[in-house]
Image (cartoon, rainbow, N blue to C red):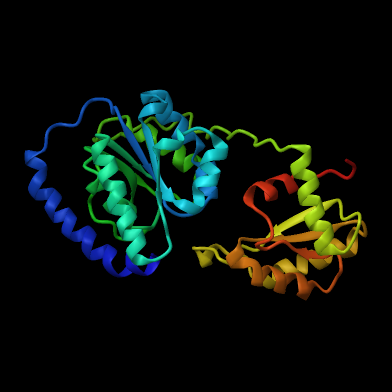
Length: 313
C-alpha cells in the first residue's frame, strides 16, 4: 500500500488537482454546516484512540447516525471497543493485496456517495491516498493536513480546509484541531487558537475471566506459576514509520536493566502475529527466564486485559 501511495499517489494528486480547478466553478456551494461526515484514517490502530476528540466533535455536530469512518479491517477492533461510531457506519478496507484493497476502496467510495457524505476529515499526515479518497467521495468540505512549508508529502490541492502539520504538537491535539477547523470558513483564520485540549478516550474495562485467561497464557510462556507484576514492552517491529522507531537493542538493554533491578518482575514483549518472530528474538536476547514473548499469542482484547493484571487476584 505504501509503495502504491509513493509511486502513484503524486501523479494522481496532481491530476485530480487539475480536475478540481476545472470543475470547482461548476460545483454547488457547500452548506454552511455539514450534515454527514466521513472520517478517513486507514493505518494504525492507536490512531483511533488519539482521534477520539475529532470523532466526538463530529458526533456532537451531526449525530451518531451521520458519522462514518473508513479504515483498514485490522483497526475495526479498536473502533468497536471505543463504541463511538455505529458498527454499520464503519467502512472497512482489507489490506490483503492490491486487488482486494482497490476493490474495497471502490466499494467504500460508492458507499460514501450513496450516503451523501458532504464533509470528510482526513487524519493522515503523510499518505496521499486519503486525500485522494476524500476528493473522490464527492464531499464539498474536505479537511486535512497540507504541506504549507513542505514538511509533509506532496498531496496536491484537494482539500478545502487545509491545516499545517506541526510535529511539536501532540497528535491528540492535532486531530482535535482537524474538525474544529472544518467547521469554520475557508478563509483565514480558520479557527480560534484557544481550547485545543484533546478529550480523553474512555477506559476499556475487562472481566476477571479475561484477566485469568491472559495470566494463564503468560504462565505457560514463562514457565512460572507467579509471573506478576508485569511490564509490557512493544518494540513495534512492524511500524509503518521506521523513522520514529526506537532501536531494538535499546529494548533489550532496558529489559535487562529492569530485571536486574527488580527481581520479582516479568518483562513481556508484545506484538501482532506479523511481529511474533521479532518479539521472540528480543525476549531470547535478554537472556532471562523472566523475559517472555507474547508476540502473536494474544488477541487485542487479551492484551488490554494484561494491563489490568495485579499482583494479587
